Amino acid sequence: MNWLKKIIEEQDTTVYKFAQRCDIGKDIFYKIINRDSGVENISVSTMDGIAKGLDMTISEFLDKYVNKKRG
Image 1 (cartoon, rainbow, N blue to C red):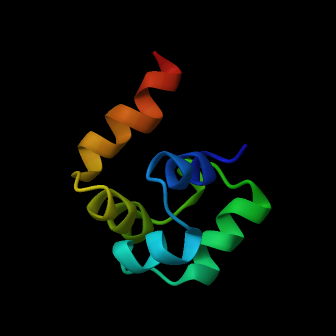
Image 2 (tube, one colour):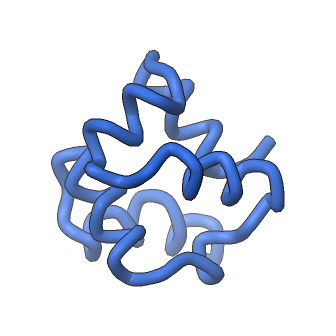
C-alpha cells in the first residue's frame, strides 16, 4: 500500500478531506497514490503541506515516515 494512503488511513479520513486539511489539491494526492510515488519523488511544497496537515514540521514528518524506514 502506498505510504500516503497509509497516512490517510491512520488519520481515519478520506483522500479528499486530508487534501483539504493539507491545502493540497486532491488530484495531486490521487497521482501520488496511483503512481505509487515515493516520498523522495514529491515536491518540497507537497511534503510541507502534508506535514502541516499532520501538525508536524517537515523534519518531524521525515523522521516519522521516511528516516525510520532507512535506519
